[in-house]
Length: 93
Image (cartoon, rainbow, N blue to C red):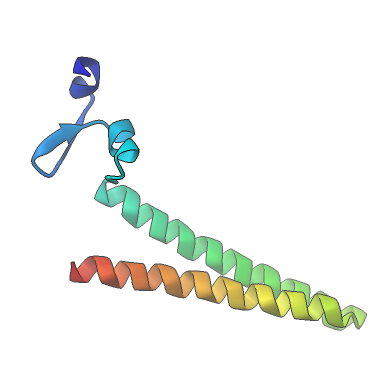
């Protein structure tokens, strides 16, 4: 614990390491922002992948591939909207 105290970062009124913060469910604000940013990027990548898959399915005349591509597009959009909503809730708190 003493070793961790030397490497500890300040969060609120107590000191704890990043490892301890994750263990007890207390994420640093920077980690929360990065996770939402990465979720938005992940959603965007999934949306692009879905558009590509849908386009290839249309080109090949494969209805199943088109449908799964469109489903991935919607899933990617949903992930992005969820991350945006999480950002808005954080700002209001």
